Structures are given as structure tokens and as C-alpha cells.
Length: 404
Ligand code: AMP
Ligand code: MG
Image (cartoon, rainbow, N blue to C red):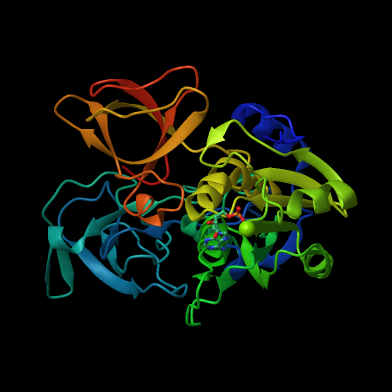
């Protein structure tokens, strides 16, 4: 049997080699409305305190806490402007939520705790200084650093940027990820099948996981198993993208031209990993761009993406937490495993509140062509090499792909 010329790397070693070659993309300035999910590349501070004026947190009356008895209503202060109303001894002003507290008042009494009659307001609950008032700078003080570089701009952070009037921000851009499929057997999903053909699945699932990871997929279509065509499409794609993903053509077949292309036109860092599925996962740098060549089997390409590409895209996008959470899980049934490689079985993990443990079942047939093995999976079980079958009740580690 011919031997692959590429050393078989343990998964963690291949991951480390890849991440060493990957750097965050140069930051860009974008409108804050385009920044959802992106990583901030600058510190953002507040020029002014929030709130800028003492603000009523309820609808009701602004009063002086020390006064006693009914107060005379001397005016009103609605949210949205500064009314020229002042609250003196024995007086009150009608105030709405979000309005500035009138001068002279030191507490807000909510409308539910008042009785109004003939221009006077009686208060039916105890009042203390500061009640129902957000003081100046309560939420953010002037000059405070609110969001550090590296913060992820989730919806609350976008709202904060809006509050601060910070409408353009420096962020790490979404990596542009070129995606192409290789294989003489592939046709487009809307094409009829003729003998020997299958429909291209990988381009579409890979575009999806790229998007889920925060990248922008760019579809470069399909290329035949022929070195000239592959080279031409790759050379056209590379200048337009930050990273290239191919699937297929990395096995030991006579028409597997992707590895030789990378080795010839760039540097091949990873040519084989000791993993199932995904042994032929390949990584190199070509014309300065990271190039991931994933195996053609649909499950292998997605598990390969999960194990090697996802963290690279996150790093390019400025993230520092690159890893999925992991949990120890208890197997609910026997799992057969051959000890020569680490195996990533697709599984459904649930949390059992009664015992405080995570339980796992695999998703049935684990063939690397069976995309249904990923349907309903929220985890990858990590079955280590050097160890064979796992009986029901064994504890193994699981990579959580989604909320359990
Ligand atoms: P390869 O890695 O090119 O040797 O392909 C391995 C297996 O995956 C073969 O059965 C291919 O037909 C299949 N395959 C390759 N590319 C795709 C694709 N884009 N979509 C679905 N199956 C594919
Ligand atoms: Mg192929």
C-alpha cells in the first residue's frame, strides 16, 4: 500500500500549528449598526456621565423628603425637556419616568402612592431622600472606559454604543472565506443526477458554518479533479478572500490534486491528522493566505471545520476565546471505538438535573458520509486514541456545539 508522505499529526498539535500561522485581520472602521457580533478593536470611553441629569425612574411626584403632609402641586416636568419648575418647601411637581428631577426636589413618589385632590397631593407611603431617582453618573461616570478592545459587540453593547453616540467603531472585520468543492462526480443541487454523479452538499453546509462562525462566505463553485482547473480557480479566488476552504481531493486517490497544489505553490503545514473523521484534513499558506483543504465526505468536512477552521476564523475576527466549552458526559449506551485514532462522534447531550450529570447518546450510524449523524447533534464525543470500546456508563469528554 502506498504511504502518504505527510506525517500523521495528533489533533492538538495540528491545531497549534494552524493557530500559530493565523493572525487577527487588520481592524476597520464601521457603522455601529454593522457591528453586531464583531470584536471591538479600540477602547470605548464615555465623554459624559449616564445619566447626564438626575432622572426620575417612576411616574409620580417630585417632592422634598423632609416635608410633611399634603404638598401643593406647583408644575410639571415631562420627559424630553427641562421645564422651569422648582419644588420649594411643601411643594411637589408632577414628573414622568425619564424626566429630569426639578430643582429643589430630592425624592420621587410613585403615582400609586399618592392621592391627588384640589391641587394638592397626599403621600401614602414613607419617602426617603433619593427614592426613585437615578443620580448623575449612576450607570456610567464621565470618562469611564465602558468597553475595552476585545469586547464582543452583542446587542447590549450595540445599545451602549448608541447611548454614547459612538456611531462608528474600530472592529475586526468578518473574515471573507472563499469556498469551493472539488470532484468530477459533483453536480449542482438543482441539477438532475446522471450515473456516477452526486449533488454537491459541502459548499452549502460549509457556507452555513462559516456564517455561524461570523465569517462572510464567498461561493466559488465547483472544480473538476484536474490540476489546471483547480490551480486556475484557486489563483482567481485567493486575492479576493482572507482564507480559502476547499472540500474533497485530499485523500490518496489518483485524482487528489489539492495537497500537491498547496505544497507546490505555498507551504503545507498539516497534511494528515490522527482523527476520525477527518484524517486527510490539510492546511497550508498559499500566496500569504490560509488554505484549508477539507476531506470530501460531508461529515468529515464539517467535523474538520469544527476542529480546525472554526478557531482560526475566530482568531482572524479578533476573538480570544477560540474553544468550545467541554463537559464530561456519561454514555447512555455502549459505543464501539477503534483505538488507533481519536474519534469525534456526533451526539445529543442532555443535562440530568436529578443527578447533576450530563448524559449522551450518539446520533446513530457514524459513517462519515451520513450527514444525518449531525442532524440533532449538539456535541461531539471525544473518544481518545489508545482506548477501545466504551461501555454504557463510561464517562467521556464532549465538545458542546450548542446549548444543552
Ligand atoms: P474525496 O475527499 O474527494 O476523496 O471524497 C470523499 C467522498 O466524499 C466521496 O465519496 C465523494 O464523492 C464525497 N464528496 C466529495 N465532495 C463532496 C461534496 N462537495 N458534497 C458531497 N459529497 C462529496
Ligand atoms: Mg474527490
